[in-house]
Image (cartoon, rainbow, N blue to C red; front, side, top):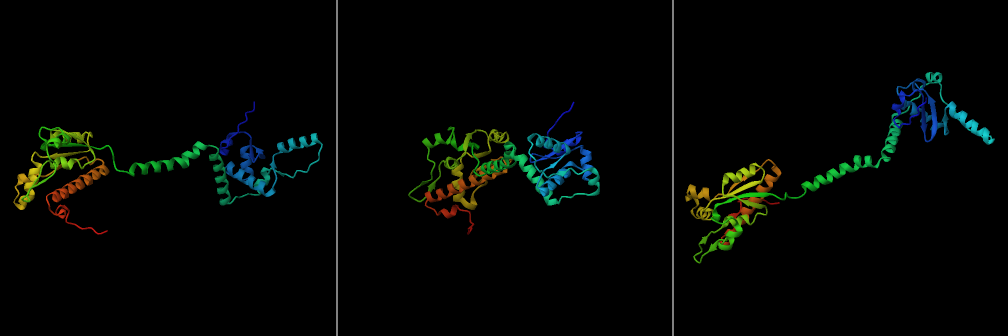
Length: 304
């Protein structure tokens, strides 16, 4: 029983008893693998194939085996039309031992490139995976990092709210802007809500600092803000008293911030936004109190 196998992987054919090498629909040789490699003094069938291909191009005709010649001659006799078909007989093993053919590295590379390109072009899915998929990965990557993080939630402990559960409720009954009196004195009210309204991130209110910090550790929120009960009043005293301000005034006028820095990009993004919101609040307070807004700016001038 004879089993015929066709394959594009030339080295796979080495296990066969007899192989036929074809190029462009032309039969180049039909011999046992070891005989072909011995004839061309080659260690693999790919070099044999390249050598035969080179000779085919030089002769500009078919390189056919004895079997191919016999079949072609029988067809010519049936048609009774004499034809002259030049051919190059397959090189015997003795001739191969006397002469060794070599292919240049550039020709070998060119042949390999053409073979691989033809193989890839037959599989569009593989072509997309090789060229399209990396491009798609790069596009998705830059789209993912191109904008600001969204959907971030902050935990808020605002003791200044008193019995109110959110700044929205507090703002209905209390002012959140400084009040300038006729004697040029200024009273601060509800500055914690004024500050929170400047932050775009969603907020979840807590009554306990420890629970708020725990929500950050569990990943439910990305940061925690803590305002003391007399935040606005103590901030006013801090500005009025200056160097004479007590430790209690300094501590209770501070805004406590706890950020989750496991994702440093998000952490630095929040830190920048919180700082900018505080600077904007300070400038608006100075403006409302008829003071120079430069007093609320960082004493640094950067020229670009």
